[in-house]
Picture 1: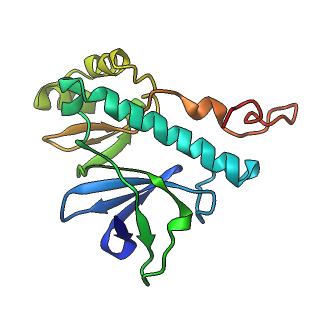
Picture 2: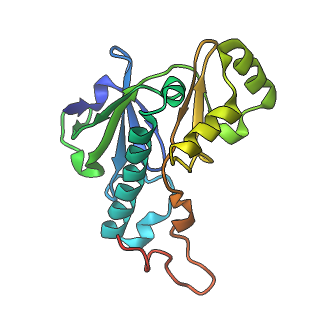
Picture 3: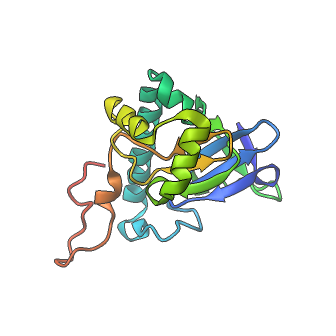
Length: 197
C-alpha cells in the first residue's frame, strides 16, 4: 500500500506514526525506523541502527500478538478499535518523494479510527470513568481483567479514546518492553547487551 502523507492526518508517537484516513475512518500505525528524523526522545539512538530497529520490531510483534489474542474475546473486541491486520507500506512525502526508509515498512497495522478525547488509561479521571461506564455500559476493571485473561499483560501505558458513545483502548501488548529502555545505568552498562535482538 502507498501512503502519501499529504492525504492523511498524522499523529506522532514515540515508536510509531499513526496515519489517519478520515474518509475511510481507518488508521495505520507504522513504526519508525532508526532513520526517522523524530524518534521522540526514546533514547534508542544511542544503541545504533541495528538494535534500535530490532527493538522496535519486537515491540510491534508484541502489539500484533495482543491484537490477535483479543480477537477471541467479544468484550475486548467491543472496547478496542476494530483490527484489520498487518500490511507493508510505501511512504511518500508531500512532494511525492519516497521516505519509506524512515519506517519499518513491514511493521504496520490497520485499525478503525475513533474520534474523541485521547488520554492515558491510568491518568483518566475517576469521575469521567464513572460517567462513561454508566452511559456506555461497561466496567473498566472487568475489561482490564479480560486483557489479562487473554495474556495481554501490558496495559499500563495504554490510552483510551472516548466520546459520548464510544470507549476504545489502544496501545496494549503481550510484554512490557519499557523495562528494556536504553538508558545507561550507573555502571555504564547498556541494558540491550543481553537482549537477543
